[in-house]
Length: 374
Image 1 (cartoon, rainbow, N blue to C red):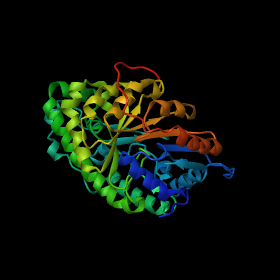
Image 2 (cartoon, helix red, strand yellow):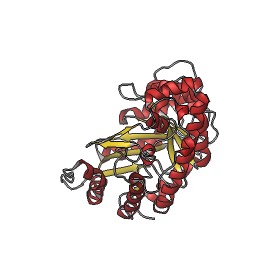
Image 3 (cartoon, rainbow, N blue to C red):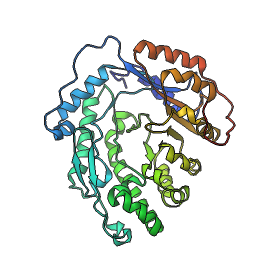
Image 4 (cartoon, helix red, strand yellow):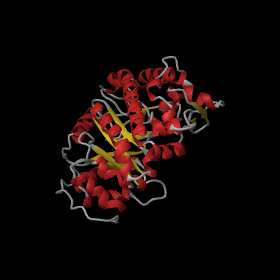
């Protein structure tokens, strides 16, 4: 298959297959983007006046995607990905009946099982209504995306939540923090029910996009020849490693058993406490280490990065172009995926060349204690 905005798509597929297999090629995997050289000077399409139309007007969504793709250079393993944005209406709680309020940039989901104790609710009765407006719209949006992206780009399967965060969306964050103290076993059972629902949702969406994508991609910009999603639990930032392991790790393991390939989105330094538990999951192939807003570069946490590599797992980090040489001087290129944004296509192409020179299949690093810099 050829892609207008990714002429080297066939090579990119092979590189991703090698990355998932934890093989070492001539360089680490690198997602490097920049403004495209020689792109026409033009303004982006004007957004519709009504907020709702910014998320649901198919013509505007197509024009917006095409504009950004034809102005972007996709180097290395970077991919042009069609998406309609992630305002929250595609969040699993909306499919289950939650109310959402949209604005120009995002959406706010309101809990609907937030009264009383979590044990007051029978999670077995919580199912998707086939006529749910958001559920029907999500499927229609993917079908439209497949047609609009045909021959040009891949289509994201979306960002619809996962372990812990879906339950927090239904119960409310503060309520769930109380639930895991008062009713940990029931919270675990509830979350596993929601993960089974998540799997049903994913399978429905995957059947729509798998042929167009020759596999799948999601909100996390990595491609897989099979079922792929980025597992995550942002709620876990606020809980202990013991609570995470006992209540939520079983759901994440269930998710990895279903998917062919999984990256865990370790979002924020507060979630670093759960990496040891996550490293025990045999089918969790890759880890994104994302310190979070206001925190130092991922390279500041070199002990964490080396711990992941020492366990033979793939590692993804996003860094500046001036940090790539330092990263490759300290980390093995085997299983490493770097996300980098450059200011020009010339800079991006030069960085890819240098990446070949700097990449080394290093012995697994010795893991040392504490959190330190490079």
